[in-house]
Amino acid sequence: MLAQLTSAALKGVESYLVRVEVHIGRGLPAFSVVGLAEGAVREGRERVWAALQNSGFSVPPNKITVNLAPADVRKEGSAFDLPLALGLLAGLGEIPGDALPGMAFVGELGLDGSLRPIPGVMSMAEACRQGGLGDLVVPEPNASEGAVLGGLAVRGARTLRQVVRHLRGEEEIPPLELDAGSLLEEDGSPGPDMGEVRGQEHVKRALEVVAAGGHNILLLGPPGSGKTMLARRLPGILPPMTLEEAVEVTCVHSVAGLLGPGQPLLRARPFRAPHHTVSEGGLVGGGGVPRPGEASLAHHGVLFLDELPEFRRNVLEALRQPLEDGHVVISRARTSLRFPSGFVLVAAMNPCPCGFFGDGSDRCTCDPSQVSRYRARISGPLLDRVDLHVSVRRVPFQAMARHEWEEETPSILERVRRARARQSERFRAEKGVHCNGQMGVREIRRHCRPSAQVASMLQRAMDRLALSARAYHRILKVARTVADLAGSGEIGPLHVSEAIQYRALDRATPL
Image 1 (spheres, rainbow, N blue to C red):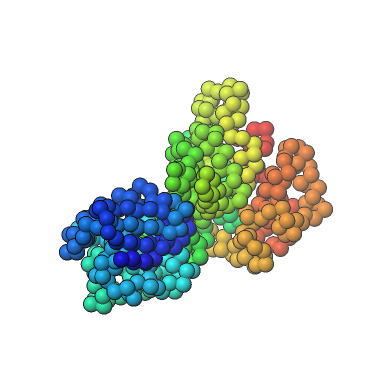
Image 2 (cartoon, helix red, strand yellow):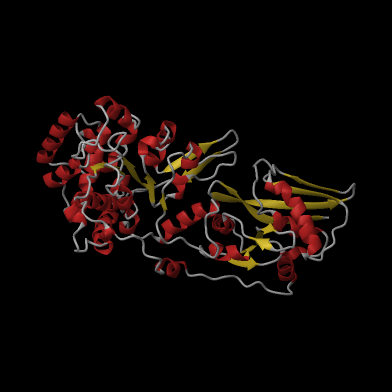
C-alpha cells in the first residue's frame, strides 16, 4: 500500500516542496523515515503514532517506510507530522486517494491529535503557490499568515480528525481570505515620539538625513547624552513599509519563530538591539541548521548596536558584507543559504573608555593612548561603511528645562516621505536601488555629479581629512540626500558642507 502527498520544508528563509511517500508493507513492525530526516522529523514518528491512536484511528503493526523527497536535502522541524499521519491513513484506505492531489499539508501534531503552529508558513505558502498547488492545510493559528499572499486556498485546522473529515467530504474547512492591503493600513501602536527629545537639534537633523536616504550612522557621545533615546525614535521617521517589504520582514520573523499568534503581517519596521555579548552567528545568522540572525531580523528596519567597541571584533567585521550587499550568505558543506539583511545601522559609542573625553568637563581620566586604543577597536573598513559620524553632546540645563514641545515625529516624517518620493522617481529605472544609501559607484557617478565649485570643496576636504575613496562616495551620497530634503535637483556647496560635517571621526578631535 503506497500513498503520496505534498508538504513543504524550510531552507533558510525560503521553502521548497517535499514529496511525502508512505509505504505500508509486510515485515516486522517498524516505522522508518528516510530522506535525510533529522532531529524533530525522526521524533515525529512517536508523535504521529500517539496522535493517530488518540484520534480514534487504528494502525496495524506493519513495516512502515516513509521517504521525503528530494532525498538528498536535509530536512528539519516538526512540520511533517501532519503529512506523515495523513499518508499513513491514505495508505490504510481511511482517506480517498483522489482527495490528496493538488493539496499540501504542514503542521505539528500533539499527542492528542491537535495541530500546533509551526514557523515559516508564509514562506511555505509562497512555495506552494509557485509550485502550482491550489490548497494548503495548516494549523489554525498559522492560517492568517499563510493567506496574506493570496493565490492559494489556505485552510486552518484545529485537529487531525478535522482534516480527515475534510478530505472525506464530511466537513469542509473553509479557506481563509484576507486583504493584505487593509492589514497594512491598520494603525499600530504609536512608537516613541521625536518631540520627547530635548535639545540635540543637530543629531535630530542627522537622523532625518539617515531616514530620508537609508544611510548608516554612528553616534559618538558621553553617557547620558541621549544616544539610545534618539536611536529608538528613528523607526518612527522612516517611511512606512510597502506590502512587499512587510511580506519580506514577516517571512524572516516567521522563520525565526518570532511571529506572534494571530499576527499575519508585521506593519512596523523592526528595531533590533542585540547585547554586545552577541556571537557572530547570533548577529549575522548561522548554527548547525542556519537560522537568521539579528541583522536579518532587522531587515527593512533598524539595527542598533550600543557600546560598539564592546562587541567582539570578529562579530563587527561580520557586518561588512550585509552593510555592503544587503544580505548575508551562510555557507555549509552541503548548502549555501542567503538571508536578507537590508537594514539601517545605528551604532553608539563613548568617545573614550570612561566616556567623558571632550565633553567640556574635567571628569575624563583617560590618556591619549587609551583613547586611541579604545577607538581602534572599530576597524577602518567598518567605519568607512558608515555614512554619518555624529557627535552627541550633553544636553544643557536650559534645553532640558524648556516647556515648549519639540518638533514631533509626523512633521519630520512628512519631509522624509517627500525626499523618498524624489528618490523613487530618480531610481525608477535602477534595479535593486530604492534610496540614496543603496547607490553603488555607478549610480553615484550618474546621479551625484559635483559642479566645479563642489569638486573643489571635496578636494580640499579629502586632502585635509585624508579621506578614503569610500568616504568620498559616502559624502556624495549624503549630500544627495540633503539636497533631496531641500527639494534641490543639484548638489550644492551647502549640501556638501553639511555632509562633510557628518564625518566626525575623520576629524582630529571628534568632540
